Length: 176
Image (cartoon, rainbow, N blue to C red; front, side, top):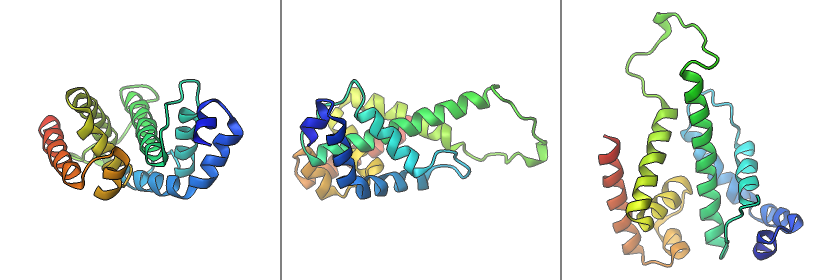
């Protein structure tokens, strides 16, 4: 079914999504819990937007079930980052709403800006070393365990843990 979906068969794509919807919903729910309160994007919309990107005209090559979920998590991240970038552009003047200075929380971090910075740093890491970047995508954005990441990327669990520690420290340094 994955191969037929890749070739543009919408019915196969819908059948794939029906079979994996619960897992996609779990991944999307996890991502949405990290989002700022009042985010206008809903879990179901995140799943649908990621699916549309996966089934679009530039559909990625899907090798197996683990790879499918890795791509789904990556597409969800991209949807959230695009949503955050759009929200940030609104904050720079588009649709500006006047605020009373007493209502502004000084020192509060902007989750949208944090997500955009993380995405930029993750893209830099991917250029430096793609494997640890994939580990971060699967663990952080996909909610996978070390064992699941190892299976999806055909690595040992020890290698996944080393890549995870390297990526975490590298991303922390980049974002600090």
